Length: 383
Image (cartoon, rainbow, N blue to C red):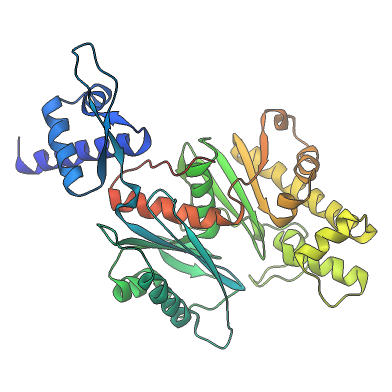
């Protein structure tokens, strides 16, 4: 066997062992050999390497086996390194720092100042965040950036709500921080985060409704982004031809009718208010305000119509919706589900997001961890 083939097999076996320990702890060396159909010698060599790198730690002994020995159990060392995950929102930047399993997390929010360069402001925040990280064996192992726009192969192609001077944000940040950087659409990160932490469906649609409307698509457990990253731009499907103008250049986009900004603007106009916050709107709704009720009726109706198309196109196991409205107004998910006029809806789960607004950040943690460890499946914390 050539040296190249031997190295490939060794790397593949190492990934298998690490993935098993990370996703199914605690395991003994004998458990790993049996589970992965590897020799005990191979497993012992790989485990020692992982112990030396401090990716794996020994917990102690399990119950005695029939041979009278107590096997030593192994688990993943989620504190071997740190990750910085960024949600680059329209009005604020949210930064999460955590270990490789998404535990021991700290989340901070920073308002965006339009007078500042977005990239320079982001770099300043990242330097401050990095300096506050705890000391770990591997240090900072990755940075993820969630973008509200179209991203293909880490390249930002289009952002309707903010201006980025560097479309190749990945290279720009990697040169600055000398660590791997992942740049991805926020809805794509959301579906990855929800799948890694909460919902273990292989075919999932994640609908993110905030300032804009994005959709993450998981097919057979894999993220689907289309030919050049435009798959999932659900907010820019046309609901009303010749309708409201959209920053994307079209008219009548769904985003102009069901985004939180659109809903709040419609309600404020109906009430003669200059503006209204999400929290105040929800209070109006819960108090039975007729205009708030009417706006929410339109909201659920339009989503139901649009999800009918999604259901016909993808036939998913589950549709997860993340919005302040669905998260905090009881019964709204049921209203949306009843509005899906499709016989297949009886076999469909429509659920609120477990992670809510940290789904983007946890998706970034998941991708950075998988990239650093060289494994394809990585289960984060269970909710």
